[in-house]
Image 1 (cartoon, one colour):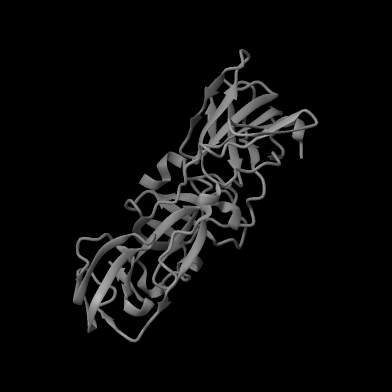
Image 2 (cartoon, rainbow, N blue to C red):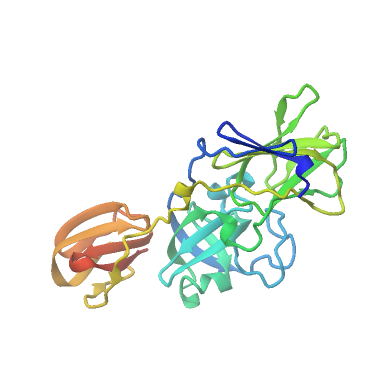
Length: 316
């Protein structure tokens, strides 16, 4: 690790070794794991190049990636993030490398291979729920890499960060007076300084959780990515999985129609039921044989019954 070129900054606690300061900002971080709902679709993907809107390299044969709708793509702020998508058949973790301009808010367009893990291919378009998760669960997220776009120089500099654990909300570079200047991020996921950044340079990036990393004396190199040797951390509370209570799914009782667009019926009368979303939040509770789902967004829900039984409901 090029420790003389890298520094992490914070206000919490400090570790000193060989005059290198490594400080991790933990207390100011906020989790980025709220639940999104929408529709899941599939397309050919962008494996084997940097063909996605994020301009990130995707290995040939790597189908665990997706395109986000314009709203959640957020002007390329979501590029490089990982999301966990849940459908009727299960869940899959995907890397965001592309944009789906025609998709509605909450929608995810994934590869056919990934779609098959959460729904039947024949369905084509299905209700889903998803949330951002740390990319430490994927093999490509060991340390952050710095890439300089072809054509970069001290007069026009374009910088991209690859293999990130969490999305980057801001990139700054240090001026001669030691102040920091914010840099514009383009739709194709490069931070651009049109007047150029002199090399070597000091760069500071901030994760969506609020952690700052500083990389010092980075030399502009168009031939290979610079391995920072560092990665964004994840506070322990953000590692907690948002899920329903750990209950056994039962098929002793049937729900119909399921998926549903409005009223769902139970084949047996229930003295007490509770409706929760994929994050375990209680939405409604009651008794009887009918539940009105018409006011809820498309996605995955769970019906908690007596005797620690639960049933999955798909709203579409």
